[in-house]
Image 1 (tube, rainbow, N blue to C red):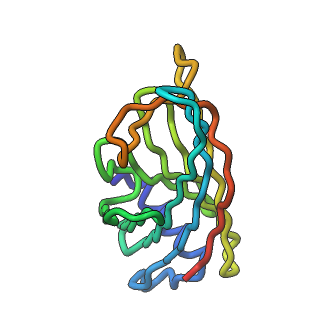
Image 2 (image 1 turned 60 degrees about the vertical axis):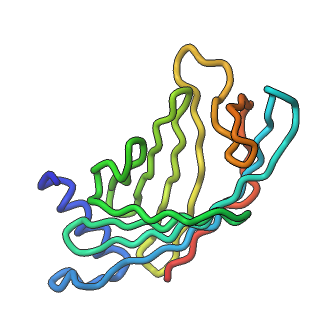
Length: 164
């Protein structure tokens, strides 16, 4: 991890109340997210997607995320360092002392989760989908139906954050 990211991670931990000299404490957040997916192909229908993410910032810029699908399925745990890929598509970045960004690069679009904290034990989260150049619809995979899908702009139904 670069020196800049390490300093930013330290600042982020400091602003949310972790002791700077002893960065042994962790910062933990629970994100409760839900959005509707307006499918346009292979059939027109709207479905609800929801996730609960527990994000743990640790010593030295370590990050761990526990992702649970609220409608069943197995949860996933990913670990790494801030700024590094947690898997082939996702990474957490420190933008400034108050903002973390989780960015997922899909073939047709990017999906961003903006996690902001004011340092007083509160946080907020926003979701954003952006189509890549040359695409007119979002592309994804319907896991339960095991088929590729195309959909228009998702709509956020819930995006809450809790400092643990």
